[in-house]
Image (tube, rainbow, N blue to C red; front, side, top):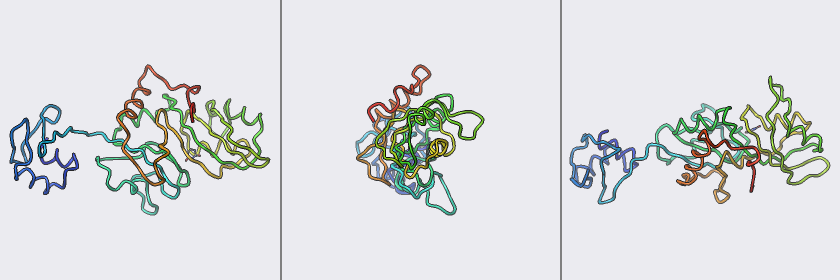
Length: 252
Ligand code: URA
């Protein structure tokens, strides 16, 4: 990789700014000052320093976004504001949202350029648990909870997979639950609640696999995932450790 591209990818500046830095002698490769922007380096092995600070090349980026209502989950849209517009300064090329939250759904959304991780998180075979906080209108009976927990007909060829319901509060005509599902079908939560005679009036995703929405993160804001969060997510998706429904929602 060219040295100037490496420095751009590291967010040190624009192509012309990093070229200036290189020409001024601020950049070293393996302890030797390099003044040629087109210098070819082995980004996996060479040690690049800028003003004495070593730079570790990071190609994969992971962000937690607290999605607000009113933005669509897409990289581009001709008519609506997108979630990507909420991360104008995030480093990393080719960022995209993992999975889809409806325009009026809030909560946890992972934004990354790691296609392999996204593929695993969305794979129907991985059964990644997703927990939603849902305020609903309608009546919630024991039978209806049992239906949600065993599998409900939402008009697809198959019933939904068993889900987990945690009752938060209830009145005669409304209820609030945390619902953990192991799939990601289109409008799944809203359709499951509809199938038991209710309507979702507010929906927020709290977690996806091992990743939990950071309560300190204001709506509309984002932050990079910690190394631990990335590690846990990857670890949980490795073939040996499937995330079981009994684990899901624990501690939420
Ligand atoms: N289920 C829904 O109905 N909507 C979402 O945004 C996510 C899950």
